[in-house]
Amino acid sequence: MTITETAEALKCAPWRVCEALERHFPFLGTISHVDACMYETIAEELAPDDVIPKVEAYERLIESYTAMSIATFAKSIGWGRNELFYALRTRGILDSENIPYQKYLEYFVVRHRVVSGINYPTSYLNARGVVYFQKIFR
Image 1 (cartoon, rainbow, N blue to C red):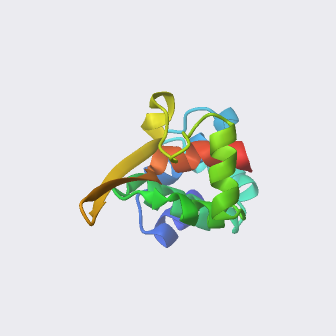
Image 2 (image 1 turned 30 degrees about the vertical axis):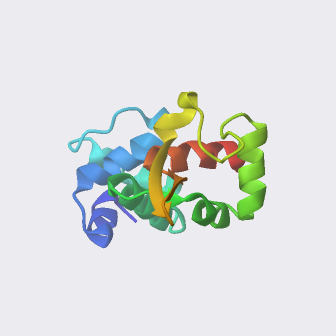
Image 3 (image 1 turned 120 degrees about the horizontal axis):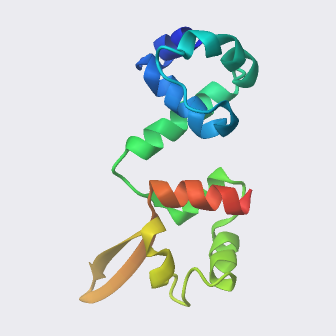
């Protein structure tokens, strides 16, 4: 599949595909839209059909404004919710109440909900956190 065909399949501009290739295959260097024609054969070899849906999902996630629950993220990497919470606590990322330490706050969104007058903070992963923790836990 060429860069142009990939862009048409994903309904995006060819430069978006070039950016995704640069991110996932940094050894290619910077790919400008003009250079895209030269890389179409390389992209065909490096980006098999099973990679394209992953790139599309990654792009959607990065562009979204929502956060992912830690339980949902745990399922996506094949772990259980409690397993992941335990791993995050033992690595010093979350405290005993599953709230991230200041050092790791850039990867989380902490929302508060009030139940019967009691404030309960809940941690969610933002897009940056999903990418970061996928690298750690895979």
